[in-house]
Length: 191
Image (cartoon, rainbow, N blue to C red; front, side, top):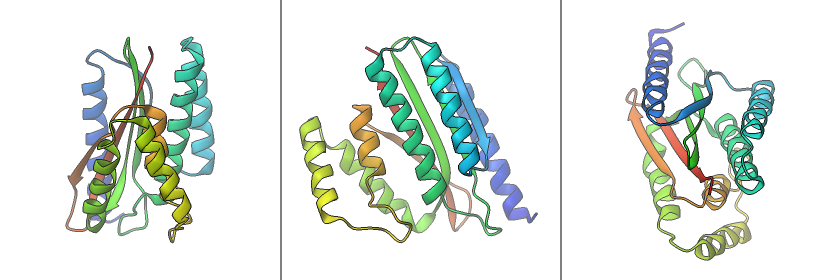
C-alpha cells in the first residue's frame, strides 16, 4: 500500500470519527459504516438501514424518504465515487436520528477538478424554495436525457433533494493536489 493510499485512508477514518463525534451531540447514531463499497456491502447496508428505521416506528412517509435517500446515496458513492492512485475508493455512511429529524451523511473521494461543478449543482438545488420549482427542474433535466460516461443521468442529487424536502449540506476537504473528501448531508424531518 502506497503512502498516498494510506494517507487517504487515514484522512477518511479521522474525518469519519470527527463526524460521528459531532453527531452524537443531540443525535443517536443508528448506523455508521466506514470502508469499501461493493454491491454486497450496499445490499447489507440497505437491509440494516431498513431494520434500524423500521424499529424506530417512524411514520411511513419519512420512513420511505430515509430509505430512498440512503439507497440513492450509497449507489451514487459506488458509481460516481473517485478512486485514489491505487484504484481504491474510500467511503463512509452514517445514519443518525434526533427527536425531529434523521440525517444521512455520506462521504467519498472526488477529483479536485470536479469540485466547482459539484458545488454549483448542489447550490442550484438549494436555491429552489418551492418544491414545485425543484420538481420542474427535475423534469427539465429528465427531458434532456443526458447520460454520463458512468451511465447516470445526473438525477441523484436532484432526487435526494426532492425526497429530503430540505436543503442539502455539503463539504469538501482537500486531501491532496488531485483528490478531496466530499461529504453530503441530507435531512428528513420526522414531523
